[in-house]
Image 1 (cartoon, rainbow over the protein chains, first blue to last red):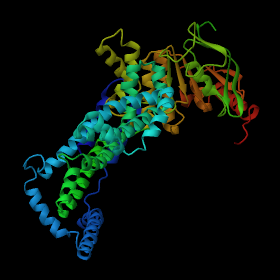
Image 2 (image 1 turned 30 degrees about the vertical axis):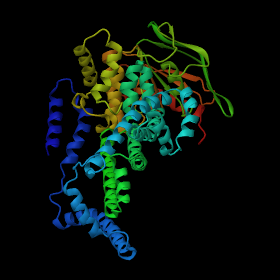
Image 3 (image 1 turned 60 degrees about the vertical axis):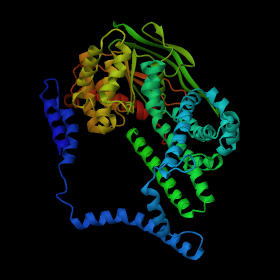
Image 4 (image 1 turned 180 degrees about the horizontal axis):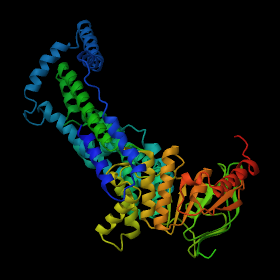
Length: 304
Length: 265
């Protein structure tokens, strides 16, 4: 309602200015007002309920199916704990997620946080290196031709293959795990940024050429905003992969972290905790993904 | 013609290397454009009229001949030759005001203060009656409004010559007519030199002082040049029955549909 009145105010004030010629200008601003006016008086309650049902039912049914299959397998298999046993274990575990009984016995909260910290640091360095590199590769054909074979060769390598190199160089487990995150995060970031730079619409570059903008203005006003959606896709892919890799890396390096925790609970034969960890890893990954999607939506412009 | 020549095209030709060999788009183009003149380039699609405009803009360089603007060889694009693109080419992450300001800053930023620059951008948008949408983003306004902002951006640069590549081609007939009238009004106020590519016969006659008719490609060149000696300001309703207007229109139609028949693609 407020949007409609605001628009009509502006239309009125525009007509009040002496220079305005109403004939051509008045047609267009009038349109949004007209669109806003015919509003459905009220949707019937039954339709609202139906819409809610349509939105909520399928995901709930999917989760129910998952739990049902799990319960069935647990009942038949014997060694896998069922949903109820895991639920009971989870209640105990999440009653105090941040206890600290020394480095080998910390709450699940601490483990998740330290994994996230490693991902954050490794990813941060990857962004610092990968985004500028992506810009350079995207902007200069020579650099693209030069780095293309290197990236094509290294990208398919499992980041865990780089773990021993990290251990060798850093002589410590923790930075070595961060190093694997760096390696796995950097490729999507370089590639997506470079593709984004290469796909800046020629129209925008023509604007830059006609205005004869300097390189700094081209980067800040045209390249960066145009590449940003691609960069955010790169970031999302990187963080997704990083979250996959950290679990495996921590299983190998030990220390505090959700991956190590899974392995530790396996050694203690607390299978309920492993299943809890699977859910926790899944939920954290989902939240990361959603947060970045939200960010990407903020910076996607209604193009054309 | 007593007015100063601002653009001189001498024997310009343009060819592209393609997989099938050399493709000659334009040949032997000779054209002088005087200060304050409105010249239209008209022809069937593929006749190289946009190529010629891009040569004047400096977006592409000729493979033969030369183009001179204001006594200097055209070696690349520059803000003294502003372009209104067919698809408006506004930057979607900047508001209408910021889009115009970007151009104004480039041209006047070194000489004038912030307040003066903003006033220039506002004045340009006011001229095309877009003052109500200063803070709107391009995706929030209609196609006709976007093209107005594109025109405002070009005029705000106070170019020596304004180049328009089918500026109203993507708009519906009614919006196009109102923008043509608006452009006529702006030209009367500013006395700008304009080169416009169009395929619309009425638009060409209504706006131009001279209409350059191009032959069909490949190897297109200038076929005929028509002087439009209609008094300004021009009124589209009065002109509809005007003898000279009808004659000009007939001459164009004859050229396009009799002398340069385009085979159906």
